[in-house]
Image (cartoon, rainbow, N blue to C red; front, top):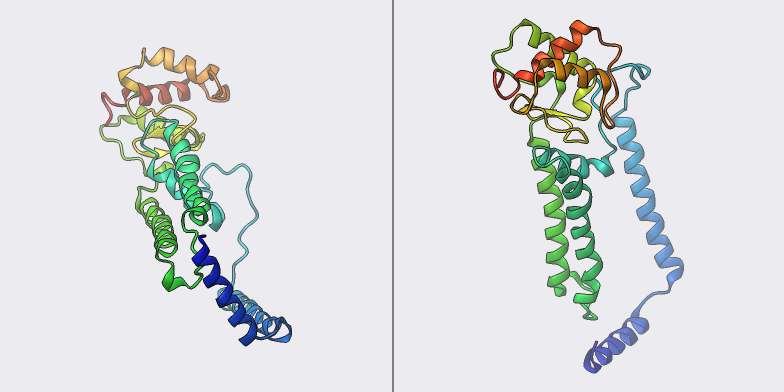
Length: 244
């Protein structure tokens, strides 16, 4: 703030102080009115749009699709936008790079726009930046909402034989989509995308052994019978080759 701006600020401050009203009771009264209206709106919406209490949570469920609270919804939708990229990229882009860029813009804005003016119509830089950030949040959230749902039961694979169809059902029921992608469905990590697994597979027998032992952070699927492991291995071994 230069000298001229300081002088203008002092003049405006002195005039506002001379013509203004005291904090009590005027400001207190206005805050009370606005708070009462806001609480009334919340209570009214709660009465008008009641939230039903569903069935008790089943911890053994494998088909439940969790959804975050509204304040995490933006990040959730970002993960859906970047889900088809490198296994590490969705986590970095959706939970670190994009949110932190927006936060950095808002934090740096007061240091960039340092004028004394506080009226919105005389602060074009601040207003345009705030509008762009809000628009970006809304636009990226909408992109994520329009992305393929990625539900486990929505995988469309052509050319499946009976064993592979049984393997796809096992892939869904056993929660494999919580760590792996398969035909743009499932989670983007931490496990690798299995859509083209058949191109790098060493055969059904080795895939069965991988399923049984559970390498790395993957849990071993010892509870599966040999026939079930074979059906799952047949599905994976044909992904990207026989099954598309």
